[in-house]
Amino acid sequence: MTTLSLLAPAKLNLFLHINGKRPDGYHELETVFTFLDFGDVLSFTLQEQDEIHIEGAPLEISLADNLIYRAAKELVPFRNVTQGVVIVLEKNLPMGGGVGGGSSDAATTLLALNQIWECRLSIDELAQIGVKLGADVPVFVRGFSAHAHGIGEALTPFELEEKFYLVVSPGVHVSTALVFGHPDLPRDSAKLAPGWTLSNTRNDCESLVKKLYPEVEKTLLWLLKYAPSKMTGTGACCFAQFETREAAERVLLQLPDNWQGFVAKSVHCSPVHTQLNKHSNLK
Image 1 (cartoon, helix red, strand yellow):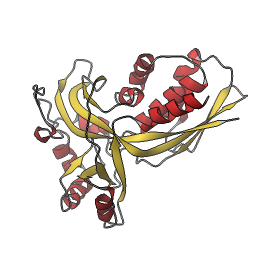
Image 2 (cartoon, one colour):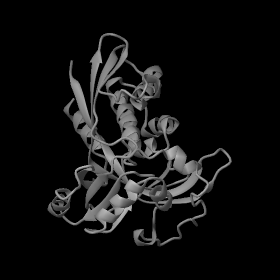
Image 3 (tube, one colour):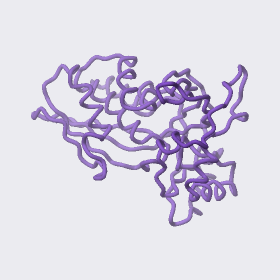
Image 4 (cartoon, one colour):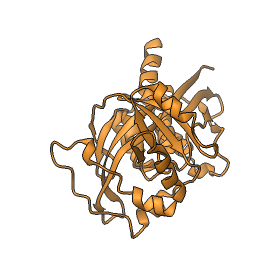
């Protein structure tokens, strides 16, 4: 059987403003997502047994909580083939790092199985399914860099100049639930006015996360020696922007041994969409 292998890309939140808390418990926010040309790799192979089999998933996550499995189950009612699927995960992105690894894996699964199971769902329909799996899943489904608001599901395309980023994981797992449930989290940022620029933005979670997770603060201070540093999402990953890949890789070589990092280029269109379009054209 033919195997379809796809990159589930990382994302960065170039800023994160929290505008308030809704009656349903979710937070109103504003952010800009950009994709990177680096991420997890997912391989999909149809099998005769009508089962969803996943290999390579982290052992500490139960099947019921696995976003890849949950995404696949969501598409079972829509499929037009009877075969099951084997999904193999090559995990390259840190868990709890704020780079969207789980959400990206879920979105890539929705996009891939929509094609190989011949579900014929639109991007809008896949995004509606995606938001049930997580607030960040729709941006990966839609596949373009975007200004997001609401709970992160309302997206407006946002064209960004492609840059190179050094992304550093300090080896701690930040609990998004802990951050968003914390009484010290700022929740009163004003909505961005017309004509806003990225230079006037910040990450409202950063000061709290630095207090709760001192290793994140160490990472930001270390990166600051080389370029302005920021935290993505609720962390723990931090990043700095460079004009060339070579400049970013020179700093990567200086990375302390107890941290992990990678260099990647930002891209306006998600790599998984580019790959799926090529796959469709080959058929």
